[in-house]
Length: 214
Image (cartoon, rainbow, N blue to C red; front, side, top):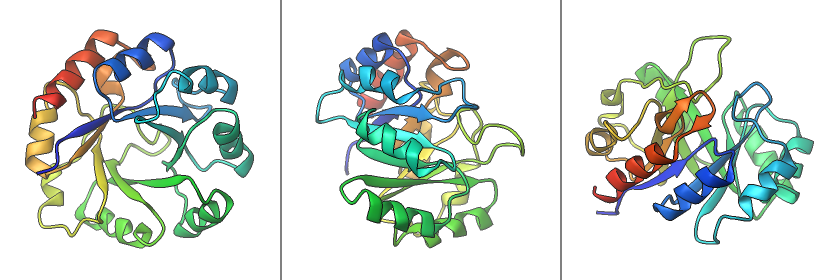
């Protein structure tokens, strides 16, 4: 079976980027959403993505963003993957595919009930990867809040070819998350933080070491 890999999302300092790389993250995530405590400007992201080697994905996370924000994150910020974490319809992904044909497109789907999974089917023709995340309360951030959904909702679900799991995953439960769901890519943000938006290099190391042991 394919080994488990991990994305560390919401990186914002050289030290935490270096820790993610040193301990084997497959993807480094950078948030471009002003309401998030992890938000970066394109030039700030550039200083961080330059530290990321070619074999590690550089994922830009956006929430219902305008073209200009995404354009700058790619052109200046250096990201090579677009992760949409808002209410973007499939048509938005199709438009971005035309605008940025060489960029990978991920779509986060917020899950609370089995019915929420049906949304994933709508994005299969236009997304390279579906990311299942916990649905957060209305009016709060769409992710990065340490919430998890009921993983048994994924039982028997016909997944797209590429998918990932997110939501409330840390070093203590990542083995259970991967084992219970079969996810081969795990995404964490708050699970490696000491406070909202403040990544902890020791927690990053512990998380990635646990992933490497799976």
